[in-house]
Image (tube, rainbow, N blue to C red; front, top):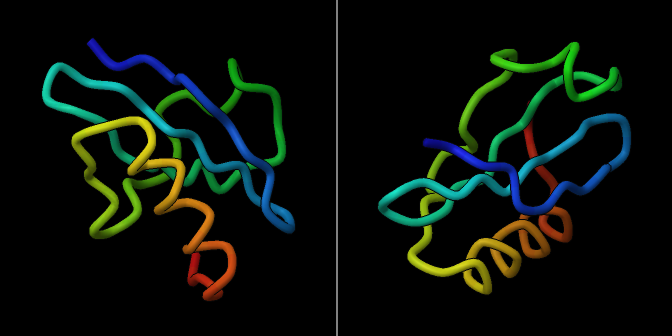
Length: 70
């Protein structure tokens, strides 16, 4: 099961930190719409798989600072 544990709006995109059985990853929804309207749309940010929530939060912060491609 995948659960969104944190969301962050960066410029015009929503990024979700998602928890799985094996850890966490960052998911770019590519949408500005409500969560229910963007379920299943988007992609996992490359190299964003982390073991802990703190690592995922740090990854997202660094991702925002360093620029990103969508």
